[in-house]
Amino acid sequence: MSKPTEGHRFAAFRHTSYARFFVSRFFNSFSTQIVSVAVGWQMYDLTGDPFMLGLIGLVQFAPALLLILVTGSVADRYNRRMIMAVCLVVCTLCAAALLGLTAFSLFAPLAVFAVLAVFGIARAFLGPAMQSLAPNLVPAKDLSNAIAWNSTAQQTATIVGPVTGGLLYGLGPNVPYVVSIVLFLVASAAVISIPKPPQRMAGATRSWESLVAGFRYIRAEKVVLGAISLDLFAVLLGGAIALMPVFARDILALGPWWLGLLRSAPGVGSVAMAVWLAAHPLRHRAGRLMLIGVGLFGFATVVFGLSQWAWLSIAALVLMGASDMISVYVRNTLVMLWTPDELRGRVTAVNMVFIGASNELGEFRAGTMASVIGAIPAVVVGGIGTIAVSILWAFWFPKLRKIDSLAVPDENRLSG
Image 1 (cartoon, rainbow, N blue to C red):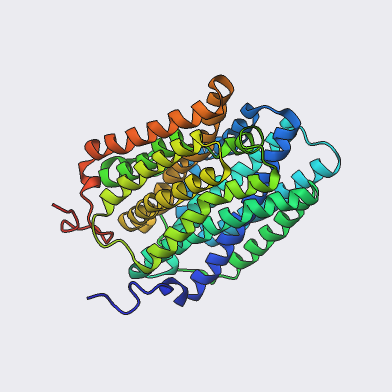
Image 2: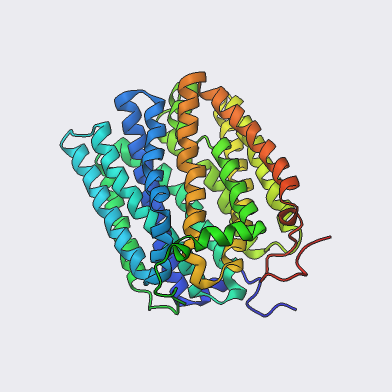
């Protein structure tokens, strides 16, 4: 029988440190979304080239890939709370730099990409520290609830942030950057206010074996490998977020406010699903539901690519968000629960690169294909590829498919 806190919708918030962490995570995500919409619209207005939109994602992803052996090790060796705080301050400075470029009419691709590269470096260190900190703030029995609320914070920001970014951009190109600076500062203050939590630090050895320990663990643990790689290839193929300005302006004939609405639609589905999962955690057939969710994500991507109506596009994006949340929830819970705390930063760094690849690199893929074959075929082909990935992974990773409950690893959690 479950303990009283288990299954309680707000179990994670009974821990004050987690509540502060939640606030920091939300305002960080909110501000990042505002910056993303503003930069994307500004860049497309300036160049009219979808390839540039793809480069925005690639420039931000590259640091996470290049620094993968460093970022996870830092999260395992040093105070994760302070790493978050320093990275959020750097993000604040990057938003200030974008404000300066805009205010003084210096907004140009090379200058913007330079700022976004620094922004990407900060996010490369922020990701592993932030993801690894949450399990230090709540007991294991409340971790799945915390992960659901983490996703809610992320996706609520994904809903509100783009709409806010579009509205603020309509008031003037400087306004969204000013607001993002304030929000990054709030996020920094919230994480600094968290008392230093217990953390099992990695040993002092800085050998090659220590640096690649995260890779070795993922390779050995097929469930974690399958879950992470599923997300990588599914969203790498199915991601269409980078092409939102093209669909909003050229295909659906909409303005910047509608762009924000389109960007927010996946978050609506994600938040609805995350809130439901917080109150009704998956008890059985978690692996199968994860694979089904990825397949639905691909189907919804195809519908979005073919749609010529704003209402259908929004409905498809909502379904994309809801189905993707199932995969995110299962994957994050598996990675956090199955990984020892002293390895969690390095494993999370690898996971974050996979996430970055499935988002930023996926945006580069979409932008490149769109410039060659057009935006609609690029999205439709990607969605079909995502469906194929969900089917292939069901056969290639049978242990993942048979995962039943999301609990501490033992031999009894595989379904027959």
